[in-house]
Image (cartoon, rainbow, N blue to C red; front, side, top):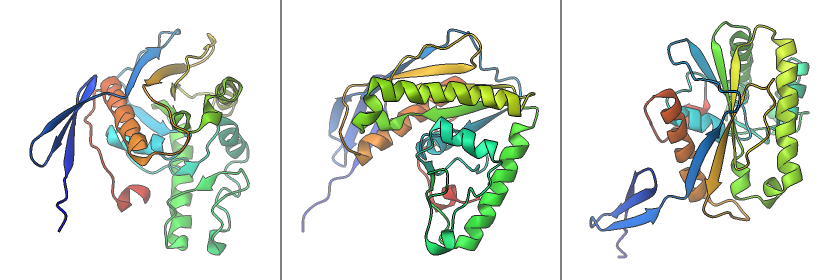
Length: 258
């Protein structure tokens, strides 16, 4: 019988300590690093009530918020792909009309070209879950709490399209347009957007964006599961550092419900 070797990882700021089941240690240089570009000098005030809202580009933003102990309940943009800012704006303009597609016939991509991933296998329960999520989102957006939206451009790591300067800049431009729209639709909103990207963007004085500028030692041309998971863990660590919370990695089937 072939003996299986199991590994466990202890993360450090600039490297990984990887141990196997013989307690043999391997030192691996940490793949990711970051800095904050915050020209408008926003502060994260932990003394006030706040809510963190996953805002795309895919499910990783919700997972990262969960890892950082910041995800308190399910919202309608948690388990979606691809969630470009322009599509979020279209959904909000239409007040989530037809947001849930014909899931009874195994259609999970809606008219906004957004796929609802991790949909409940019991589609009737899934539909009710999305009704609750949309209601919660409306309550959050019209409430008095400070909001921190989290947008993560994970695809930059393993999709060359997202690394093209014009395409990357267009996503950020969409986010600026979404900001303008949200200030009009929700005039009392108090918010910041934590925009995780591998590019530093020009942030106008009127914007509430804080650019989390990432760096990766290696980039790929296709999805690599363990790299994606390490990236999500690392982004969770960034949020823990910013919000002074506890890191709780991992998820269960219950993570995708509610």
